[in-house]
Length: 94
Image 1 (cartoon, rainbow, N blue to C red):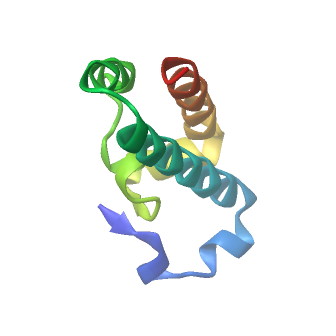
Image 2 (image 1 turned 90 degrees about the horizontal axis):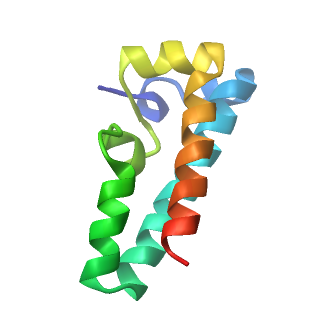
């Protein structure tokens, strides 16, 4: 795992795709925190099922990336995956 802000905080300024990915990850963290505070245990089980095999580190700390994650950022796949996850989380917490 790489902590990008510790490695180079300026990476976000130079790479719009990385900035977008970080923003989406912050959104996921906010949604998960809100869900944890306001929903029942049953709803939390649904949320965990929604997350499925998703890489947990992506929803815990927006600064942690694996090398695979960085490759997915580069080609836009990670942002697409995160957007789908956000939609699922929003629909699951209604």
